[in-house]
Image (cartoon, rainbow, N blue to C red):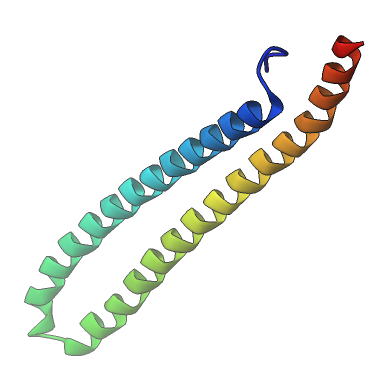
Length: 107
């Protein structure tokens, strides 16, 4: 961080970086969820053929797929929360140090 920049600008910059990092994490998780969904839908197409023969098996297979999507969403939310908390902590730690440096440089 720069000594020339005001503390408010530095904090807003760090928060913006955190938000950007969180969005990239969310994008990655969504992309992974889409890949899983594609695999699941490919499995559904195959199970439709076997559904005529054995409907009980198709019902059992569909339950874990929903759980996988929910788990992916939860993981994304947790990742976003952790990233936000980390950046908030960094901003809080950096702010007092910058305030002390600013006071020393004014003297």
